[in-house]
Image 1: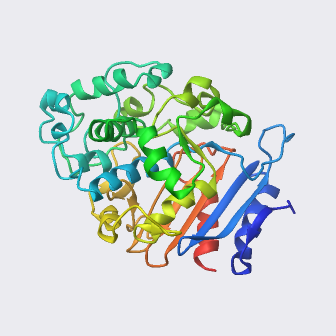
Image 2: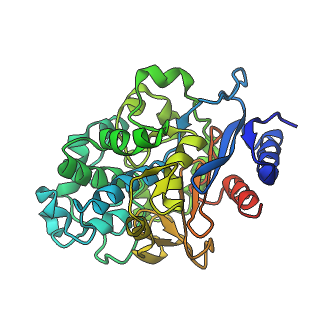
Image 3: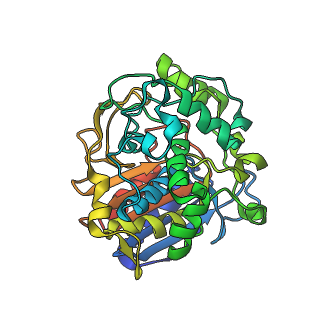
Length: 374
């Protein structure tokens, strides 16, 4: 059995066993898992290798691109501003970003950005991948663009655009970029090694993502709707994209966060404990509870699955029965963050071997189940 590094409370020994089983079965190459209970780490483990050739071990401080698990960090920034009274989720976006009201978007509210119901799931204007590093271009195009569908109760996953939309609101209010606000107001106070816009000094400890085969990727999109293809292929982003220096340096707050399971849990355990973790309070209890305000509930126009969205997080539903006070989100390839306020539990999983699907990968779910049933 693969040797697992780090430590854990014996109550959670099964979590370490599950991780070892995934590595032994070659379902993972390298990965980290964290479980925080009452805001404190009870599992902090890692194992395997940081590279596909298996020449370098996954270390304690190894980090990698977690794709859409980054969205939980961007949502946290918005929650902090809302709890301070500087942001009203029910206000029109144009209150903070006047240019946004163009093309009939005057009535779109901030909560619609968090709940993926704004109708801006992609760009109408063609973009090259490197354009994602141009903040002004990406946000200006979205401000000028008309929504792709009219119903604000209908979600369509804003896979990449959500980070620019929420990030620009944060920038207009705070005067600094989303990545800077996140570092100064969220990550640093909690001592979390998570980055939206990575410094070159951290490149050496990044585990490059291992993409799925091209055949598997093509198969994943074979039944996608026209709207989904518009949203997910302009521009085309793959695991290989995350290897590029421009991608690491840019601030792409829906997709290019770099961290490990420990750093994700160090931040998101704040929600599990209703705003305070390890003596640091960033949200009031009511401010943390806002995530459970339902924004949509039904088939998602992009993902093609029934999803119930709260304020920036996925919520319990018939399709995903995780508990009445639980929320979650994950990233393309497999990373996952699960939060349960009733249990005051946060479980996170970060890996380098990507699954082909946007949804349906069970590696993280198996680890959550092992922790939740301990």
